Image 1 (spheres, rainbow, N blue to C red):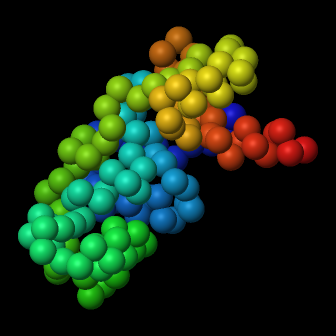
Image 2 (tube, rainbow, N blue to C red; image 1 turned 135 degrees about the horizontal axis):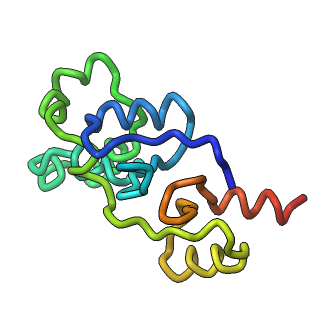
Image 3 (cartoon, helix red, strand yellow; image 1 turned 120 degrees about the vertical axis):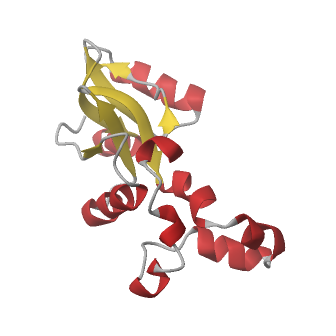
Length: 144
């Protein structure tokens, strides 16, 4: 489990959340309120927000695919993406993340990840966020 977490608040702008993901090279960020996880955001959560509907409906599927996985917001795209400025983490987060208690065994975490087809679990103690465990963490431990 990683204890040093990068988190965001539900009211944080989504472009700020994206900048945290990029800055720290992480693939998910836990959204917390009063030390409790209330949501989780991965890069996939940004896809619907970043692809205007008219592009998704009319563009070549290859171009849409490239657009979906483009990392970061370049200066030249800032004006094109200005419609994202009013949106906040709560607008795109996956709410009520599946969590695991800190005292549970690793087998329980693996089972939850497989059952829910997810690759990261916020770790809680008495409902308060204390860490995160990811598929990569598990693989690293098994490989060593």
